[in-house]
Image 1 (tube, rainbow, N blue to C red):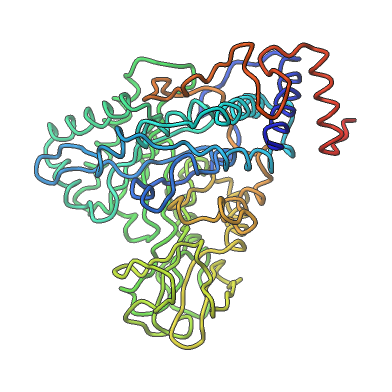
Image 2 (tube, one colour; image 1 turned 180 degrees about the vertical axis):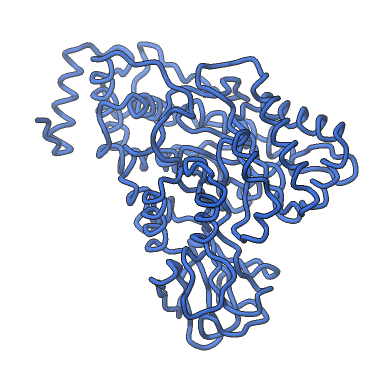
Amino acid sequence: MNIIFRLISVTLLLSFFASAREISETPSLDEQPGYVTGVYYTEWSYFLNHTPSDLPLSFITNIYYAFLKIDEETLDLHFADNDLAVKNPLPFHTDKIGAFVSDQYFHSSISDDWVSKYMQNVSQLIQKSTISPINSIGLLGQLSQIKNLNPNVKISLSIGGAETAQVFKKVIKHRQNMVRFVDNIVSYTQKYGFDGIDIDWEYPDAASTDRLTDLMRLFREKLDSLPSTSTCGKYILTLALPSHLEMLNNYDMEDLPQYVTYFNLMGYDMSGIWSKKAEFQSQLFRDPNIDSDSCINDTIQYLLNEKHVNPRKIVLGMPAYGRTFNTGKIYGNADACAELDGITQDEEECIVPYNKLPPLGYTEIFDKRTGAAYASNGKDGVIVYDNMDSAKLKAQYVRGNKLAGGVWWDSSGDTTTSNGSKSLLLSFLEELGGLINLKRSLCMVNSNLYYGKFENQTFDSSARSPSSSVSYATINEFKLWLLVLEFIVISGVVFL
Protein backbone atom coordinates (compact mmCIF):
# COMPACT_ATOMS: atom_id res chain seq x y z
CA MET A 1 0.00 0.00 0.00
CA ASN A 2 3.01 2.28 0.47
CA ILE A 3 3.54 2.26 -3.31
CA ILE A 4 -0.08 3.35 -3.84
CA PHE A 5 0.30 6.24 -1.40
CA ARG A 6 3.56 7.39 -2.97
CA LEU A 7 2.14 7.15 -6.48
CA ILE A 8 -0.94 9.19 -5.60
CA SER A 9 1.20 11.80 -3.83
CA VAL A 10 3.66 12.28 -6.64
CA THR A 11 0.83 12.21 -9.22
CA LEU A 12 -0.88 15.14 -7.53
CA LEU A 13 2.39 17.01 -7.38
CA LEU A 14 3.01 16.36 -11.06
CA SER A 15 -0.54 17.43 -11.93
CA PHE A 16 -0.11 20.71 -10.09
CA PHE A 17 3.04 21.62 -11.99
CA ALA A 18 1.61 20.45 -15.32
CA SER A 19 -1.50 22.60 -14.88
CA ALA A 20 0.63 25.65 -14.15
CA ARG A 21 1.52 26.04 -17.79
CA GLU A 22 -0.09 25.45 -21.16
CA ILE A 23 0.54 22.16 -22.91
CA SER A 24 1.90 22.92 -26.36
CA GLU A 25 0.59 21.18 -29.46
CA THR A 26 2.27 17.81 -29.96
CA PRO A 27 4.69 17.77 -32.91
CA SER A 28 4.75 14.88 -35.35
CA LEU A 29 6.84 11.84 -34.44
CA ASP A 30 9.46 12.74 -37.04
CA GLU A 31 10.00 16.14 -35.43
CA GLN A 32 10.28 15.01 -31.83
CA PRO A 33 13.74 14.95 -30.23
CA GLY A 34 15.00 12.16 -28.04
CA TYR A 35 15.98 8.51 -28.35
CA VAL A 36 13.80 5.48 -28.99
CA THR A 37 14.07 2.36 -26.85
CA GLY A 38 12.18 -0.58 -28.29
CA VAL A 39 11.55 -4.24 -27.56
CA TYR A 40 10.13 -7.08 -29.60
CA TYR A 41 7.37 -8.86 -27.70
CA THR A 42 6.85 -12.35 -29.10
CA GLU A 43 3.49 -14.09 -29.02
CA TRP A 44 5.09 -17.20 -27.53
CA SER A 45 6.47 -15.19 -24.60
CA TYR A 46 3.11 -15.77 -22.93
CA PHE A 47 4.11 -19.39 -22.43
CA LEU A 48 7.24 -18.15 -20.63
CA ASN A 49 4.98 -16.40 -18.10
CA HIS A 50 5.74 -13.05 -19.73
CA THR A 51 2.82 -10.81 -20.75
CA PRO A 52 2.82 -7.29 -22.23
CA SER A 53 1.89 -5.86 -18.81
CA ASP A 54 5.25 -7.18 -17.55
CA LEU A 55 7.13 -4.87 -19.92
CA PRO A 56 9.04 -1.93 -18.40
CA LEU A 57 6.55 0.60 -19.75
CA SER A 58 8.28 3.51 -18.05
CA PHE A 59 11.47 2.97 -20.03
CA ILE A 60 10.41 2.05 -23.58
CA THR A 61 9.03 4.08 -26.47
CA ASN A 62 8.27 1.28 -28.94
CA ILE A 63 6.90 -2.28 -28.80
CA TYR A 64 6.95 -4.65 -31.78
CA TYR A 65 4.45 -7.50 -31.62
CA ALA A 66 5.99 -10.56 -33.32
CA PHE A 67 4.76 -12.05 -35.50
CA LEU A 68 1.82 -11.87 -37.83
CA LYS A 69 2.26 -15.03 -39.91
CA ILE A 70 1.93 -15.44 -43.68
CA ASP A 71 0.39 -18.61 -45.13
CA GLU A 72 2.93 -19.92 -47.64
CA GLU A 73 0.24 -21.21 -50.02
CA THR A 74 -2.51 -18.58 -49.92
CA LEU A 75 -0.53 -15.60 -48.55
CA ASP A 76 -3.36 -15.09 -46.06
CA LEU A 77 -2.42 -13.56 -42.72
CA HIS A 78 -2.99 -15.03 -39.29
CA PHE A 79 -1.65 -15.04 -35.74
CA ALA A 80 0.05 -18.26 -34.68
CA ASP A 81 -2.43 -18.55 -31.79
CA ASN A 82 -5.45 -16.46 -32.70
CA ASP A 83 -7.34 -17.10 -29.46
CA LEU A 84 -4.36 -16.05 -27.37
CA ALA A 85 -3.81 -12.97 -29.50
CA VAL A 86 -7.35 -11.60 -29.65
CA LYS A 87 -9.84 -13.62 -27.56
CA ASN A 88 -8.64 -15.24 -24.36
CA PRO A 89 -9.03 -13.29 -21.09
CA LEU A 90 -5.64 -12.49 -19.54
CA PRO A 91 -4.63 -10.89 -16.24
CA PHE A 92 -3.13 -7.41 -16.41
CA HIS A 93 -0.26 -7.31 -13.92
CA THR A 94 -0.04 -4.02 -12.05
CA ASP A 95 2.59 -4.84 -9.43
CA LYS A 96 5.58 -4.46 -11.74
CA ILE A 97 4.26 -1.27 -13.33
CA GLY A 98 3.91 0.30 -9.90
CA ALA A 99 7.39 -0.79 -8.87
CA PHE A 100 8.99 0.68 -12.01
CA VAL A 101 7.27 4.01 -11.51
CA SER A 102 8.07 4.13 -7.81
CA ASP A 103 11.75 3.39 -8.40
CA GLN A 104 12.45 5.65 -11.36
CA TYR A 105 9.94 8.44 -11.87
CA PHE A 106 10.80 10.13 -8.59
CA HIS A 107 14.09 11.03 -10.26
CA SER A 108 12.66 12.31 -13.57
CA SER A 109 11.51 15.74 -14.67
CA ILE A 110 8.59 16.73 -12.47
CA SER A 111 7.25 19.24 -15.01
CA ASP A 112 7.16 16.81 -17.92
CA ASP A 113 3.63 16.44 -19.33
CA TRP A 114 3.87 12.81 -20.44
CA VAL A 115 5.36 11.79 -17.10
CA SER A 116 2.50 13.52 -15.31
CA LYS A 117 -0.13 11.83 -17.49
CA TYR A 118 1.41 8.40 -17.09
CA MET A 119 1.76 8.82 -13.33
CA GLN A 120 -1.91 9.72 -13.04
CA ASN A 121 -2.92 6.69 -15.10
CA VAL A 122 -0.72 4.29 -13.12
CA SER A 123 -1.89 5.49 -9.72
CA GLN A 124 -5.51 5.23 -10.83
CA LEU A 125 -4.98 1.74 -12.25
CA ILE A 126 -3.24 0.45 -9.13
CA GLN A 127 -5.98 1.93 -6.99
CA LYS A 128 -8.55 0.07 -9.10
CA SER A 129 -6.60 -3.20 -8.92
CA THR A 130 -6.87 -3.23 -5.13
CA ILE A 131 -10.65 -3.40 -5.53
CA SER A 132 -10.91 -5.97 -8.33
CA PRO A 133 -8.47 -7.72 -10.72
CA ILE A 134 -7.67 -6.06 -14.05
CA ASN A 135 -8.18 -8.23 -17.13
CA SER A 136 -7.46 -7.99 -20.86
CA ILE A 137 -9.01 -9.43 -24.02
CA GLY A 138 -6.08 -11.29 -25.56
CA LEU A 139 -2.51 -10.09 -25.92
CA LEU A 140 -3.59 -7.41 -28.38
CA GLY A 141 -6.20 -6.13 -25.96
CA GLN A 142 -3.48 -5.85 -23.34
CA LEU A 143 -1.26 -3.94 -25.77
CA SER A 144 -4.11 -1.49 -26.42
CA GLN A 145 -4.53 -1.07 -22.67
CA ILE A 146 -0.84 -0.25 -22.50
CA LYS A 147 -1.36 2.51 -25.06
CA ASN A 148 -4.26 3.79 -23.00
CA LEU A 149 -2.09 3.72 -19.90
CA ASN A 150 1.01 5.26 -21.50
CA PRO A 151 0.30 7.06 -24.81
CA ASN A 152 4.04 7.61 -25.20
CA VAL A 153 4.48 3.93 -26.14
CA LYS A 154 4.02 3.26 -29.86
CA ILE A 155 3.10 -0.31 -30.84
CA SER A 156 3.89 -1.86 -34.22
CA LEU A 157 2.77 -5.11 -35.83
CA SER A 158 5.77 -7.14 -36.99
CA ILE A 159 5.47 -9.45 -39.98
CA GLY A 160 8.00 -12.09 -41.01
CA GLY A 161 10.80 -13.49 -38.92
CA ALA A 162 13.35 -16.23 -39.49
CA GLU A 163 13.16 -18.29 -42.66
CA THR A 164 10.63 -16.04 -44.41
CA ALA A 165 12.69 -15.50 -47.56
CA GLN A 166 10.55 -17.73 -49.78
CA VAL A 167 7.13 -16.51 -48.68
CA PHE A 168 8.16 -12.87 -49.16
CA LYS A 169 9.47 -13.73 -52.62
CA LYS A 170 6.03 -15.13 -53.39
CA VAL A 171 4.40 -11.95 -52.10
CA ILE A 172 6.44 -9.72 -54.42
CA LYS A 173 6.26 -11.98 -57.47
CA HIS A 174 3.12 -10.27 -58.78
CA ARG A 175 1.97 -6.74 -58.14
CA GLN A 176 -1.56 -7.87 -57.31
CA ASN A 177 -0.10 -10.05 -54.55
CA MET A 178 1.80 -7.07 -53.17
CA VAL A 179 -1.24 -4.80 -53.19
CA ARG A 180 -3.42 -7.42 -51.50
CA PHE A 181 -0.69 -8.15 -48.96
CA VAL A 182 -0.28 -4.47 -48.08
CA ASP A 183 -4.04 -3.89 -47.86
CA ASN A 184 -4.52 -6.86 -45.55
CA ILE A 185 -1.72 -5.90 -43.18
CA VAL A 186 -2.90 -2.30 -42.99
CA SER A 187 -6.39 -3.61 -42.17
CA TYR A 188 -4.92 -5.60 -39.28
CA THR A 189 -3.08 -2.48 -38.16
CA GLN A 190 -6.25 -0.41 -38.06
CA LYS A 191 -8.44 -3.09 -36.51
CA TYR A 192 -6.15 -3.94 -33.63
CA GLY A 193 -4.93 -0.46 -32.74
CA PHE A 194 -1.33 -0.62 -33.97
CA ASP A 195 0.65 2.56 -34.61
CA GLY A 196 2.88 1.07 -37.25
CA ILE A 197 4.14 -1.88 -39.28
CA ASP A 198 7.49 -3.65 -39.03
CA ILE A 199 8.75 -5.79 -41.91
CA ASP A 200 11.24 -8.50 -40.92
CA TRP A 201 12.16 -10.23 -44.18
CA GLU A 202 15.06 -12.63 -43.59
CA TYR A 203 16.44 -12.10 -46.19
CA PRO A 204 15.89 -10.68 -49.69
CA ASP A 205 18.24 -11.79 -52.46
CA ALA A 206 19.69 -9.66 -55.25
CA ALA A 207 16.72 -10.35 -57.52
CA SER A 208 14.34 -8.97 -54.87
CA THR A 209 15.98 -5.57 -54.34
CA ASP A 210 13.69 -3.44 -56.48
CA ARG A 211 10.56 -5.31 -55.41
CA LEU A 212 11.38 -4.77 -51.74
CA THR A 213 11.57 -1.04 -52.39
CA ASP A 214 8.23 -1.20 -54.23
CA LEU A 215 6.70 -3.07 -51.30
CA MET A 216 7.84 -0.45 -48.77
CA ARG A 217 6.59 2.32 -51.06
CA LEU A 218 3.16 0.68 -51.22
CA PHE A 219 3.09 0.41 -47.44
CA ARG A 220 4.04 4.07 -47.04
CA GLU A 221 1.42 5.23 -49.53
CA LYS A 222 -1.31 3.09 -48.00
CA LEU A 223 -0.50 4.18 -44.44
CA ASP A 224 -0.36 7.85 -45.46
CA SER A 225 -3.77 7.55 -47.14
CA LEU A 226 -5.50 6.43 -43.94
CA PRO A 227 -7.88 8.95 -42.36
CA SER A 228 -6.15 10.62 -39.45
CA THR A 229 -7.27 9.52 -35.98
CA SER A 230 -4.94 11.92 -34.18
CA THR A 231 -2.52 14.82 -34.61
CA CYS A 232 0.43 12.57 -33.82
CA GLY A 233 1.86 12.35 -37.32
CA LYS A 234 2.48 9.48 -39.71
CA TYR A 235 2.10 5.80 -39.02
CA ILE A 236 5.45 4.19 -38.22
CA LEU A 237 7.03 1.96 -40.87
CA THR A 238 10.15 0.02 -39.90
CA LEU A 239 12.34 -2.43 -41.78
CA ALA A 240 14.72 -4.92 -40.17
CA LEU A 241 18.22 -4.85 -41.68
CA PRO A 242 20.92 -7.55 -41.48
CA SER A 243 24.25 -6.70 -39.91
CA HIS A 244 26.29 -8.53 -42.56
CA LEU A 245 27.55 -6.12 -45.21
CA GLU A 246 27.19 -8.54 -48.09
CA MET A 247 23.49 -8.99 -47.29
CA LEU A 248 22.97 -5.22 -47.27
CA ASN A 249 23.86 -5.14 -50.95
CA ASN A 250 20.36 -6.51 -51.58
CA TYR A 251 18.72 -3.41 -50.07
CA ASP A 252 18.36 -0.17 -52.02
CA MET A 253 19.59 2.12 -49.26
CA GLU A 254 19.25 5.18 -51.46
CA ASP A 255 15.49 4.87 -52.08
CA LEU A 256 14.26 2.99 -49.01
CA PRO A 257 14.86 5.79 -46.46
CA GLN A 258 12.16 7.99 -48.00
CA TYR A 259 9.53 5.39 -47.09
CA VAL A 260 10.88 4.03 -43.82
CA THR A 261 10.63 5.67 -40.38
CA TYR A 262 13.34 3.52 -38.80
CA PHE A 263 15.72 0.78 -39.86
CA ASN A 264 16.06 -1.76 -37.04
CA LEU A 265 19.60 -3.01 -37.59
CA MET A 266 19.86 -6.59 -36.32
CA GLY A 267 23.19 -6.29 -34.52
CA TYR A 268 23.19 -9.94 -33.49
CA ASP A 269 23.32 -13.49 -34.90
CA MET A 270 26.68 -12.78 -36.50
CA SER A 271 27.71 -16.20 -35.27
CA GLY A 272 26.03 -19.39 -34.12
CA ILE A 273 26.50 -23.11 -34.12
CA TRP A 274 26.74 -22.92 -37.92
CA SER A 275 29.99 -20.95 -37.48
CA LYS A 276 31.84 -24.03 -36.18
CA LYS A 277 33.65 -21.66 -33.81
CA ALA A 278 32.71 -19.85 -30.61
CA GLU A 279 32.77 -16.38 -32.14
CA PHE A 280 31.04 -13.27 -30.84
CA GLN A 281 27.51 -12.83 -32.17
CA SER A 282 26.96 -9.10 -31.46
CA GLN A 283 30.38 -7.45 -31.52
CA LEU A 284 30.42 -3.68 -31.90
CA PHE A 285 33.99 -3.63 -33.21
CA ARG A 286 36.30 -6.11 -34.92
CA ASP A 287 38.85 -8.04 -32.91
CA PRO A 288 42.13 -6.89 -34.53
CA ASN A 289 43.65 -10.32 -33.92
CA ILE A 290 40.86 -12.29 -35.60
CA ASP A 291 39.86 -12.49 -39.25
CA SER A 292 36.15 -11.75 -38.81
CA ASP A 293 33.79 -10.89 -41.65
CA SER A 294 31.42 -8.61 -39.76
CA CYS A 295 30.88 -6.17 -36.91
CA ILE A 296 28.24 -3.57 -36.11
CA ASN A 297 30.53 -0.58 -36.58
CA ASP A 298 31.45 -1.59 -40.13
CA THR A 299 27.79 -1.88 -41.08
CA ILE A 300 26.71 1.41 -39.52
CA GLN A 301 29.63 3.36 -40.98
CA TYR A 302 28.78 1.89 -44.38
CA LEU A 303 25.19 3.10 -44.02
CA LEU A 304 26.25 6.54 -42.82
CA ASN A 305 29.24 7.28 -45.02
CA GLU A 306 28.64 5.34 -48.22
CA LYS A 307 24.85 5.25 -48.41
CA HIS A 308 24.36 8.56 -46.57
CA VAL A 309 21.46 7.29 -44.50
CA ASN A 310 20.20 9.78 -41.93
CA PRO A 311 21.58 8.47 -38.59
CA ARG A 312 18.25 9.31 -36.93
CA LYS A 313 16.68 6.55 -39.00
CA ILE A 314 19.00 3.84 -37.65
CA VAL A 315 18.03 1.94 -34.50
CA LEU A 316 20.66 -0.44 -33.13
CA GLY A 317 19.27 -3.91 -32.50
CA MET A 318 20.76 -5.87 -29.59
CA PRO A 319 20.27 -9.41 -28.25
CA ALA A 320 18.70 -10.26 -24.89
CA TYR A 321 20.05 -13.80 -25.24
CA GLY A 322 23.29 -15.71 -25.62
CA ARG A 323 24.48 -18.47 -27.95
CA THR A 324 26.30 -21.48 -26.50
CA PHE A 325 29.17 -23.56 -27.88
CA ASN A 326 30.72 -26.84 -26.71
CA THR A 327 34.24 -25.49 -26.32
CA GLY A 328 36.23 -24.18 -23.39
CA LYS A 329 37.50 -20.93 -24.89
CA ILE A 330 36.40 -18.05 -27.07
CA TYR A 331 37.17 -18.71 -30.77
CA GLY A 332 37.52 -22.40 -29.98
CA ASN A 333 36.20 -24.99 -32.44
CA ALA A 334 32.65 -26.15 -31.71
CA ASP A 335 30.02 -28.35 -33.32
CA ALA A 336 27.18 -28.41 -30.77
CA CYS A 337 25.56 -26.53 -27.91
CA ALA A 338 27.21 -26.37 -24.52
CA GLU A 339 25.56 -28.53 -21.89
CA LEU A 340 24.07 -26.33 -19.17
CA ASP A 341 22.84 -27.82 -15.91
CA GLY A 342 19.34 -26.68 -14.99
CA ILE A 343 18.97 -24.26 -17.90
CA THR A 344 16.72 -24.94 -20.87
CA GLN A 345 18.04 -23.81 -24.23
CA ASP A 346 16.91 -24.01 -27.82
CA GLU A 347 18.81 -27.13 -28.89
CA GLU A 348 18.74 -26.24 -32.60
CA GLU A 349 19.94 -22.65 -32.18
CA CYS A 350 21.81 -23.08 -28.84
CA ILE A 351 20.06 -19.99 -27.45
CA VAL A 352 19.79 -19.09 -23.75
CA PRO A 353 17.98 -15.99 -22.40
CA TYR A 354 20.18 -13.29 -20.90
CA ASN A 355 18.35 -13.51 -17.57
CA LYS A 356 19.91 -16.99 -17.08
CA LEU A 357 23.47 -15.79 -17.67
CA PRO A 358 26.13 -16.45 -16.63
CA PRO A 359 25.31 -19.99 -15.45
CA LEU A 360 26.71 -21.46 -12.26
CA GLY A 361 30.33 -22.47 -12.80
CA TYR A 362 30.89 -19.96 -15.62
CA THR A 363 33.04 -16.83 -15.44
CA GLU A 364 31.83 -13.74 -17.30
CA ILE A 365 34.35 -11.69 -19.27
CA PHE A 366 33.77 -8.39 -21.07
CA ASP A 367 35.95 -8.05 -24.15
CA LYS A 368 36.81 -4.34 -24.42
CA ARG A 369 38.20 -4.69 -27.93
CA THR A 370 34.90 -5.85 -29.42
CA GLY A 371 32.36 -4.53 -26.93
CA ALA A 372 30.94 -8.03 -26.48
CA ALA A 373 30.83 -10.38 -23.51
CA TYR A 374 31.22 -14.10 -23.06
CA ALA A 375 31.17 -16.64 -20.25
CA SER A 376 33.26 -19.80 -20.06
CA ASN A 377 33.60 -22.75 -17.72
CA GLY A 378 37.15 -23.31 -18.99
CA LYS A 379 36.36 -26.84 -20.14
CA ASP A 380 33.51 -27.46 -22.54
CA GLY A 381 31.24 -24.44 -22.53
CA VAL A 382 31.32 -20.89 -23.94
CA ILE A 383 28.38 -18.49 -24.23
CA VAL A 384 28.54 -15.25 -26.24
CA TYR A 385 26.17 -12.39 -25.43
CA ASP A 386 25.79 -8.74 -24.42
CA ASN A 387 26.14 -7.79 -20.76
CA MET A 388 25.67 -4.46 -18.98
CA ASP A 389 29.08 -3.21 -20.12
CA SER A 390 28.12 -4.02 -23.72
CA ALA A 391 24.83 -2.14 -23.35
CA LYS A 392 26.58 0.92 -21.92
CA LEU A 393 29.22 0.96 -24.64
CA LYS A 394 26.56 0.64 -27.33
CA ALA A 395 24.61 3.51 -25.79
CA GLN A 396 27.76 5.63 -26.01
CA TYR A 397 28.09 4.56 -29.64
CA VAL A 398 24.47 5.46 -30.39
CA ARG A 399 24.95 8.85 -28.78
CA GLY A 400 28.29 9.50 -30.48
CA ASN A 401 26.98 8.61 -33.93
CA LYS A 402 23.65 10.40 -33.38
CA LEU A 403 21.62 7.24 -34.04
CA ALA A 404 17.92 7.00 -33.23
CA GLY A 405 18.21 4.58 -30.30
CA GLY A 406 18.14 0.87 -29.48
CA VAL A 407 15.84 -2.14 -29.75
CA TRP A 408 16.08 -5.65 -28.23
CA TRP A 409 15.15 -9.12 -29.36
CA ASP A 410 13.30 -10.05 -27.30
CA SER A 411 11.65 -8.62 -24.20
CA SER A 412 11.40 -11.93 -22.33
CA GLY A 413 15.18 -12.28 -22.10
CA ASP A 414 16.11 -9.16 -20.12
CA THR A 415 16.15 -8.86 -16.33
CA THR A 416 14.02 -5.72 -15.97
CA THR A 417 11.38 -7.54 -13.91
CA SER A 418 13.68 -9.86 -11.94
CA ASN A 419 16.87 -7.87 -11.39
CA GLY A 420 16.75 -4.30 -12.66
CA SER A 421 20.33 -3.61 -11.59
CA LYS A 422 21.52 -6.09 -14.22
CA SER A 423 19.12 -5.04 -16.99
CA LEU A 424 20.46 -4.40 -20.50
CA LEU A 425 17.70 -1.90 -21.24
CA LEU A 426 18.20 0.07 -18.04
CA SER A 427 21.99 0.09 -18.46
CA PHE A 428 21.56 1.40 -22.00
CA LEU A 429 19.02 4.03 -20.92
CA GLU A 430 21.16 5.22 -18.02
CA GLU A 431 24.10 5.76 -20.38
CA LEU A 432 21.87 7.79 -22.71
CA GLY A 433 21.15 10.14 -19.83
CA GLY A 434 17.96 8.66 -18.44
CA LEU A 435 14.26 9.05 -19.08
CA ILE A 436 14.51 12.75 -19.83
CA ASN A 437 16.33 11.93 -23.09
CA LEU A 438 13.70 9.55 -24.50
CA LYS A 439 11.41 10.50 -27.36
CA ARG A 440 8.14 11.67 -25.83
CA SER A 441 4.59 12.16 -27.05
CA LEU A 442 1.21 12.43 -25.35
CA CYS A 443 -0.81 11.25 -28.35
CA MET A 444 -1.44 7.97 -30.17
CA VAL A 445 -0.76 7.62 -33.90
CA ASN A 446 -3.74 5.24 -34.09
CA SER A 447 -6.33 6.11 -31.45
CA ASN A 448 -8.51 3.12 -32.36
CA LEU A 449 -8.02 0.72 -29.47
CA TYR A 450 -8.81 -3.00 -29.42
CA TYR A 451 -10.54 -3.48 -26.07
CA GLY A 452 -8.10 -0.93 -24.74
CA LYS A 453 -10.09 0.58 -21.90
CA PHE A 454 -9.84 -0.54 -18.31
CA GLU A 455 -13.23 -1.42 -16.90
CA ASN A 456 -14.41 1.16 -14.33
CA GLN A 457 -11.20 3.08 -14.81
CA THR A 458 -12.90 6.39 -13.95
CA PHE A 459 -13.77 6.70 -10.28
CA ASP A 460 -16.69 8.57 -8.83
CA SER A 461 -16.38 10.85 -5.83
CA SER A 462 -16.93 7.98 -3.40
CA ALA A 463 -14.07 5.88 -4.72
CA ARG A 464 -11.32 5.55 -2.15
CA SER A 465 -8.10 3.64 -1.85
CA PRO A 466 -8.28 0.96 0.87
CA SER A 467 -5.01 2.30 2.28
CA SER A 468 -5.92 5.96 2.41
CA SER A 469 -8.79 8.20 3.47
CA VAL A 470 -7.93 10.71 0.76
CA SER A 471 -10.20 10.71 -2.30
CA TYR A 472 -8.21 11.15 -5.49
CA ALA A 473 -11.24 12.38 -7.44
CA THR A 474 -12.45 15.05 -4.98
CA ILE A 475 -9.31 16.33 -3.33
CA ASN A 476 -9.31 20.09 -2.88
CA GLU A 477 -6.40 22.48 -3.07
CA PHE A 478 -5.74 22.38 0.66
CA LYS A 479 -5.44 18.61 0.69
CA LEU A 480 -3.23 18.82 -2.39
CA TRP A 481 -0.65 20.87 -0.54
CA LEU A 482 -0.83 18.56 2.45
CA LEU A 483 0.01 15.63 0.19
CA VAL A 484 2.79 17.61 -1.45
CA LEU A 485 4.24 18.30 1.98
CA GLU A 486 3.94 14.62 2.96
CA PHE A 487 5.64 13.61 -0.27
CA ILE A 488 8.53 15.97 0.41
CA VAL A 489 8.98 14.66 3.94
CA ILE A 490 8.71 10.96 2.97
CA SER A 491 10.88 11.10 -0.13
CA GLY A 492 13.43 13.58 1.17
CA VAL A 493 13.00 15.72 -1.95
CA VAL A 494 14.01 19.38 -1.66
CA PHE A 495 12.64 21.86 -4.17
CA LEU A 496 14.69 24.98 -4.60
